[in-house]
Figure 1 (cartoon, rainbow, N blue to C red):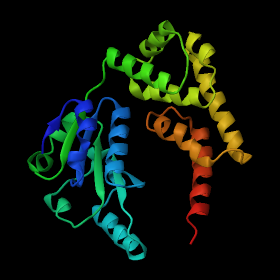
Figure 2 (cartoon, helix red, strand yellow):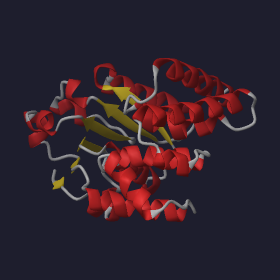
Figure 3 (cartoon, rainbow, N blue to C red):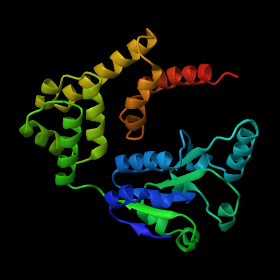
Figure 4 (tube, rainbow, N blue to C red):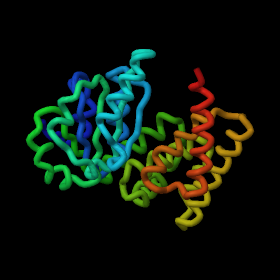
Length: 256
């Protein structure tokens, strides 16, 4: 087990971890964890993931489910376990035979270091993504805007990054809103947080409305739901609405 302090090194050399099964993440910048998981899924040719909360996670149950799925077809999953500090880790946990990949995500680096079993365990990769600084966030956000053909004045870009406290998660959410049609000029020039929140609500309203009318695919909801959910920036009513749409779409798509 080893530590990587630079997320750029991790993403660049991630192919080296193709044969690893267990990843232990701690983070200050959640967006980087999501990027790392996407990269791990890509190099392992995995298209589906299962998400658990620490208290709900049971490795034996997951292995049984994996065996049942494999009975019908060979398909690999990425198992993502949030709030992993709630799990009581034992050595036997990692002796089980599994072909799937597990990403245990800790919200606090210290909770991981306090766990003697994990600290001494040789299996798996421990990765800590530190919070990015202002310059890295500015360079990344400017590049992503350019790639998407979104034109915003350099001064406004700097203000957006400053207001977002150089958090890539928040900036990624803004990119998604811009892609979905948010008025970039009005949005970047508004000073009041409440008005910006109204912009976010109006975009979510529009997307949900279009999905109801079947004008666009429900899959697009993941663009706003997944990153916003784990930052608790989706209010309860929207969360229920989006969950219902996604569940109906999932059940329809997975009928035998």
